[in-house]
Length: 160
Image (cartoon, rainbow, N blue to C red; front, side):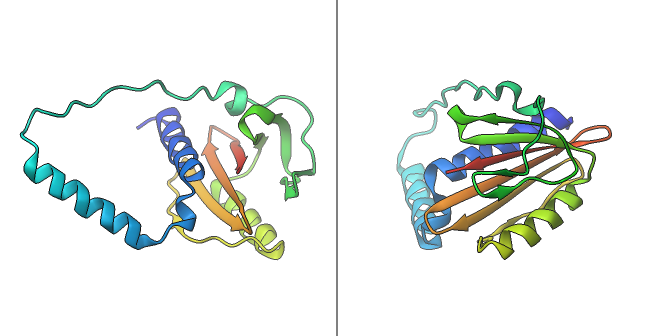
């Protein structure tokens, strides 16, 4: 799988998690939904339901930020190695490029955000060229989406 589809998949998961505030719902709700879906699946005749396609979200320039990076965005530190950065207010997001690995990004945000009182309620394993971290603090959820390219990484911070 190439990098762009992996990055888009990770972004969709991040957007879904932020939009649904899944981090604040108990696991039992998910188990209940699975049981309901299984029950419906056993009574609905095959071929009755049809999946409908949806448009992919518009990521705009988040994968290619331009401009001088800031040191902090909405109370969230930006890596000092950032070489370019850009805010996307309509998406509640900030994106930056840095000459670092996914592990460097994960280590930086684990250390800095934990020190600022953010908690990581669950981990999503990173792959070689994509990663996703979710943090919560009070009523805020922060998604840190990482995509590794040839010799740099793009980090997208999404705050809800």
